[in-house]
Length: 146
Image 1 (tube, rainbow, N blue to C red):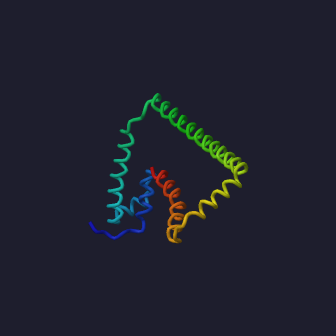
Image 2 (tube, one colour):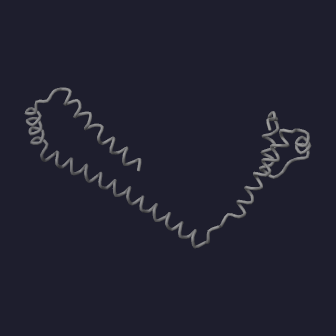
Image 3 (cartoon, helix red, strand yellow):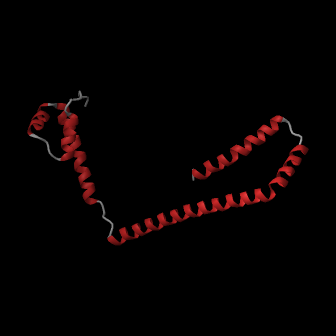
C-alpha cells in the first residue's frame, strides 16, 4: 500500500519500542492511515522479536566459564607475543649496532667496491630500488590481510 508518510511515525515507533503508547498518540493512530499501518507492522515485528528473545537458548554456566577462560588465555597469549616481538626487535637493534661498530668501515669499503664493479643502467637501478622499498610493504600488507 502506498501511503503518505506522517510526521508522527517516528514518535509512534519510539513509543512502541518503549512499550508505552500514550492516549493522545493512540487516538492519532486510529485516525491516521499511515500511522495505523506503521503501528501494525512495527507491533508484529516487535512481537516476533520478543518471541525470539524468549526462545533463545541461554548457555550453561559451565559453557560461559569455559568461554571466559579461553578469552583470558587468548588475551594473555597476545600480550606475551607482543612482549616477545618487542624483545626480539630490541635484540636485533643491539646486534646491528654492535656489528656496525665492529665492522662498519670494512663493510662500507666492501660495499663501495661491489657497487663500483656493477655496471647497470639507471632504469635497472631505479627498478631494483623500487622493488627493495615495496617488497617489505607488500609483505606486511599480505600478512595483515590474513
